[in-house]
Image 1 (cartoon, rainbow, N blue to C red):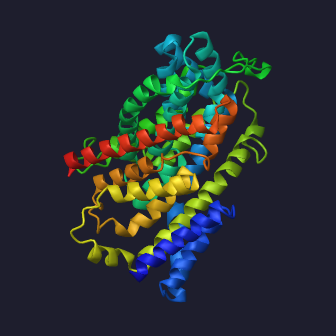
Image 2: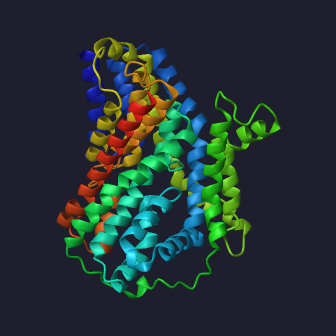
Image 3: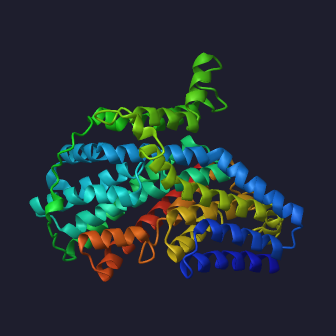
Length: 443
C-alpha cells in the first residue's frame, strides 16, 4: 500500500505542477521521478543510475525519430503539401460529402502534421466548403477534429505513439499497421455521432479577408506531397515484415536492405530527404539554424525532453522493484489491456496533453508489462495502442487543441463540450473496444 501511495503522490505532484502552477512537463516529470525514488527508499547511486539509464536509453531509441517526424511535418506544412493532400481528398470524395471528406483529411494529415497546425491549415477550406455545400459547419468542424485526434494518438510518426513504442519496446511497423486500422474503424461511430447529433448544433461560419482559400503560393504536386508520408510508413512496415521469424524475404541481400532502410530512423530520414523536394525553389537556408530545420528543432526539443523525463520516471519505477510488487498483488486480477487505457484516459483528461499522457503512462507501464500479461510482442503493440486510445479523451478546456478549435470557429465552450469533448470520448471508447477484441483474437 505504501508503494502504491507514493506512486499516486508522485503522479499527483506531476499533475498539480503542470495544471496549477504551469510548470513545464519536463521539469514536473523529472522532479516527480526523483520524488518517487526518494520516497521509495532507493539509494542515491540507484537514483542516479535510473536517471542516466532512463533518459539515455529512451532518447537513444526515439529522440531522433521524434525530431525527424517533426521536420517532415514542418516541410509539409510550410510548402502547402498538406493542403494539396487535403484538396485531393476533397475532390475524390466530392464536395457534397464535406463531413466525410473532413474526417478522412484529418485522419491523413495528423499522421505527419501536429493536430493544431493541421486544423489551422484546414480551417479556411472547411469553412468555405461547408458554406458552399450548405452542410452544418459544426458537423464538418468536429469531423475534422476527430479525424485529427484519431491518428495523432494512434499512428506514428506522431511523437506520442513513437515515444510509447520506444519506451515499451513495441514493433513500430506493427504499431503503424494496427494503429491505422483501429483509428479508421473507431471513427465509424464518430461519423454517425457527427451526422445525427453534432449537425443539430447551430454554428454559422464568419468569413474574413484572410479566409480566402485560393492562395498565391504555388503548391507542390500530389505525388511529391505524399512521398514523405507514404514512403517511410511503407519502409517501416516492410522492415517489420522482414524481421519476422518466418523470414518472408529470406536471409539474402534483399532482407538485409529492407531491415536497414526499414529501420524507423533510416525510413524517416529518407522521408525527410524526400520532403526537400517540396519547396518550389530549394534554398539551403531552409536547412540552417534559422530555417525550417532550425524551427523544427525548436518545436521538437520540448517533446524530446518530456520523453526523456518520462523515461527517467519509468526507470525509477522499474529499479524500485514496483513490477515485482504489482505482480504479487495483482495475481489473478484481470486488468489486462484496460489498465494502460484507464491511466492514459485519466491523465489526458486531467492535464490536457495527449503526448504527456502517452509518455507518462508508457513509462509507468514498462515495469508492469509482465505482471499484467502484456509482455509478448503483439501485446506490447496493443498496449501502445491502448495508451493512445486513452490519451484521445477527454479533450476539453485544458487542451490547447480545444481552444484552437473553438476560437477559430466561434464555437462556444458549451458547444465545444457537447460536440468535440463528447466526440473524443466516443472515439476513445470505440478504439479500446476494438483493441480488446483484437487481443482476444491474437492471444
